[in-house]
Length: 188
Ligand SMILES: Nc1ncnc2c1ncn2[C@@H]1O[C@H](COP(=O)(O)OP(=O)(O)OP(=O)(O)O)[C@@H](O)[C@H]1O
Ligand SMILES: [Mg+2]
Image (cartoon, rainbow, N blue to C red):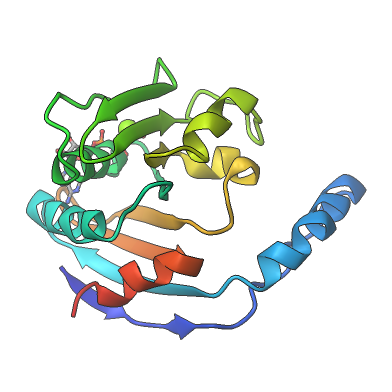
């Protein structure tokens, strides 16, 4: 795993494009929070599953109670593979399977481990029951996080994965707020 580019940004997050009046109002509602969350982003070249596992190991070291990790990328890009590796490095010994059909699975490691797969939810879905896990006392990993983006805290770690070959991936990892530190330490 190595860094393709290492942009560092403490700039304000861009205001989202407004498509409808409702979106506009919602974006204003969130504006004060959105604008001022510092973030750090790195783009990594992943060559193998082993690289993905090493990344998960590094990320796991920085996770604490209440951590939120969003995963995005096409079908088969490696979201579940990363989530499984993360669980293992957080001391989860039971088998972690994709929660595509159950929406949520709960495991116990050094912290509770919540694995959500939002794939089957409608875009912009809001499910109050998920708040107990997203704002809970464990580590919450969400596959297809953009679908429930509005329900997520602005401070979060996100991984966006692009398939570039059978085992190669380009992965953009972004840490907002307190997650900046995790990104900072990667690839050094
Ligand atoms: N570098 C890699 N990182 C992650 N997975 C890889 C890598 N190389 C090969 N793979 C393979 O790609 C597949 C990724 O499947 P996985 O279920 O993790 O994807 P996913 O993004 O969760 O898909 P879905 O959107 O269907 O949930 C696995 O079969 C895994 O073995
Ligand atoms: Mg998956």
